[in-house]
Length: 579
Image 1 (cartoon, rainbow, N blue to C red):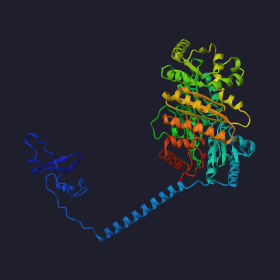
Image 2 (image 1 turned 180 degrees about the horizontal axis):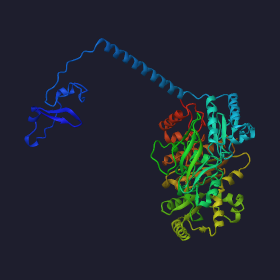
Image 3 (image 1 turned 135 degrees about the horizontal axis):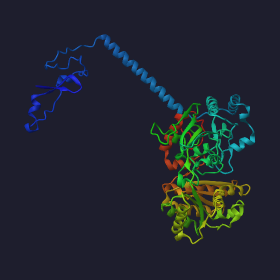
Image 4 (image 1 turned 90 degrees about the vertical axis):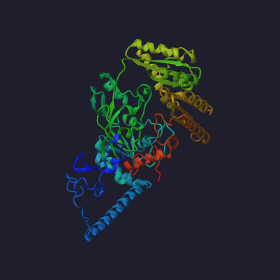
């Protein structure tokens, strides 16, 4: 028999048997080797000390069988018993931990919550905690939304640093006290409501710019920084945060709801502009989700986990934002349409045209009427056509480029309207025209009849279905005999419906709720989403189940339970606890 050396094992040999030679034709004599049977007798065959390894002369050493002694049997049995006992203990602890995470959350009593607030005051100072009823009401109820809860926090606390927030979290975690972050209070789905009471954490005094890196085009800020103020502070460098939500919005709330606004068509949403986050976890631990480069492929994308989580997983205390160059030239144009369908259809055509619009917004006839009656002085300088209207924002490197885009837009929309195209001739014209769009929500809230509430909500659908869903939604909400209006960021398939109703009139309330539910259902049938930019809060929890299904929500609950096993971070938002 021929023996061959095994690569990597100098003393191991492969043996080619005569029987295997006879099975291979001479023209295919590849000498496929097989291990000699002796090579399988021990898992230690590759060891230089093994008696089963053939020597270089092909002779094998004897391999006497060694019986297992009584002492070895005892060691094996005891080891097995110990392994089984440890395994049982491990799995028991694991199952008990899982069972605890499925236990219905138990929160502190009102008295215990007050004790926690008092302990926080001792750490942060008495002036950092308030129990004033008017302040509590302001932090627990929104006139901009019907998604409110009857509960109120026992106190509002005002941290100034990450360490302060960490101390608050440790105290609340030790006492099972719910924590509810509060930014500007401009969200509309009850995102800062307090259905389980607790302590409200207001970031008014965490409004500092921590670091500005103009060469890297990023900035590190605390959550209480207002985005408009930030852009004004850094404008001299030619950079800005390109999001455009409510002018009152602060960065922390923008992160928590993954906000967008009118510029989303060109620049995307908040998730596209967050580099990293510093987050205080429910038990007080502090983490940083990643470092500062523009790209990374290191580990889980924890930044995206917290963006849009509505404060249910942790409290954001620092945000590193990417910045964009301020466009050298901008302008605004406005054009009206005979119907809401024609306006939406023209918008869809513009989106697919390839023209780089900065924003594309829609306001219906009801909104335009409000502008003529209740708009600001700057807005009421012109008489607006009380028809569905598109507001277009242009940006580019030269005025000629913008003029070319405006001309192209005019040609594209011609099949849907013969109305005059109003184009801003000066910077003041540009500001006045765009102010009409930005004032819309505030105008509605300020003109709301006494005793009524506004139900404002949004959906988003694929661009090809935009005109259809806007037309149907407009017809349905308009048939209620109430004030109802459609307004939207149609440039990215997102629109809003707002209706005013009497909350004491059960029939009105049910009719409005049904109209909203129908709109959500239609959006899902069109492969859309129940929330384009308002997040879920307490107002859309049932709709989220319809959109994602119980299995996906179940995974979200598991993530929540692993990070926040006591369920104390902004409880009652996004989804409910379920055992």
